[in-house]
Length: 300
Image (cartoon, rainbow, N blue to C red):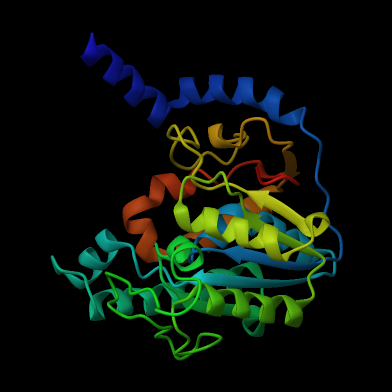
């Protein structure tokens, strides 16, 4: 019995053509009933907890704002230096702490710049904060001020990247909040795309809650990347299929943003720029290249 269940699960998750066609038939009807989101000449700020989130959630939205005469900024809260498996693989070490994790952060920032260039975002509209990957929630909740948080992977307690907004800033919630306010003051966004506080990743939830505290509700739209229950299904590249709301986003008022074939192609090219992540997570990342992206005016 258990073997049968595992085999069926494997088929559904990997979704060969017959299962994918059934999936597409069911969810195309469901997603097409959602209200359609339109974007005009916005001053768009995309909040990305890690390098690659900006492409997973919002590559289509970024393209559409730029095509319609708007401006786009991308703000990365961390440099992705806490992905232990990735650092171990790239540096060929079983102890990816210190230098190995910092070098991963530098690499992922370079990949993020390449992805943004492929989407048409100007280099001077890319902002890195350099706060600790997998540590944002701790900064805001347990280290609001005073003694800084220390990353167990990079082994530092301050922003270590020279090209960040505030190099050397201590890992405290006060520093993070101050830098975020500086960016909001500089950009003056009319629309902010932020991770939902329902997202399964703690860094995503922390950024979503911070956005709710610092940005007027009418300017916010939320997205989910870590949606629970193996979402999105099927894994792999299926650009002809719709992206349905994530299980963790059940009950939220989702809006769909349709993407053209050309926009889907550019989204895939942006994801491929995150080469370090594609080595380990290609099928998960490709599963976001769909007919649409999804955003909600409510985060939770």
